[in-house]
Length: 393
Image (cartoon, rainbow, N blue to C red):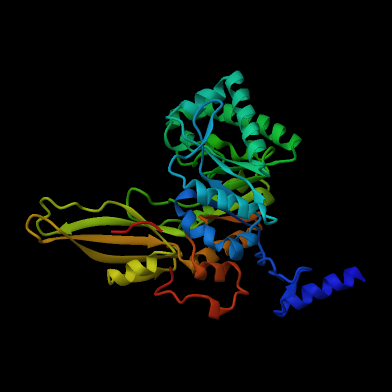
């Protein structure tokens, strides 16, 4: 009989009937889960946007990674000093009130070569594993996400041959300790494109194939295709190539999680007039919460590129100068809500183990309408154009 009542309750919830607990308080049904597992990084700099939506959005995820913990030494893991600690505590409490796994990211915040040196020394490597285990215990985490990017972006390719086996040994040792505590291990790493370990092979220092034996999930950071120069953030061809590279290296499909951007970049492309004394704006970022406001304020001209699966907009930015005649030309590329769906479709087609948003707090209602297509259209704000948070030019 109890089982029957439980089923009836689920049925009633499905048609909008609100149930009450024994003390008469309404029971809010948990948000739905998407048809492909959804993870997300949650950076500290948008907690003021993400915390207010936790009751509606957080429960739709499989695991979430607070993104404000830095590895600063062999045995030190610290909160980023810019983190609003009150909001961070609120977010952690919200995660613990759900069935979502708490899998904090640990960022390699050491200078170039620092982490590579730690991992190369067996004693230091073991001490670093001990520090991570202690950190997981103190936070009561369900798992750990490693975001050690200095190998790829600071140390130089000439270090990769030596760093690679040390990294694999570290992952194996950490996994053994975490597994003993019934915790998971996720790694967030940039993509690899083939098995050759050549100059065009991507970031083979992370040895996707070798570590796949030990990790529960590999989150591929399939974005930042264009950074220094204007261009797409995560073109469709780049997504396909990144997924194919991990598969070619022997990573099981169920362990591959495709990272999906919900942001864009805004680049300067030139100036017109006399810009003497002007404070010109450099590269900035946008996201799905801010892009529509930018397009309206700057009366930008936007177009969708079906090849890349992204939007592009251009506008002119008047800038004060000594002569008052300076105008800066700018171009914006971003992945909007439909672009998120396209990339989720790629992950579905490839039968991957999930997708991960970079980042929770960047997305808007339109993105969630694509993640959870059962959302009522009346609940979704209508965007000015398919849309990406941060200051713009």
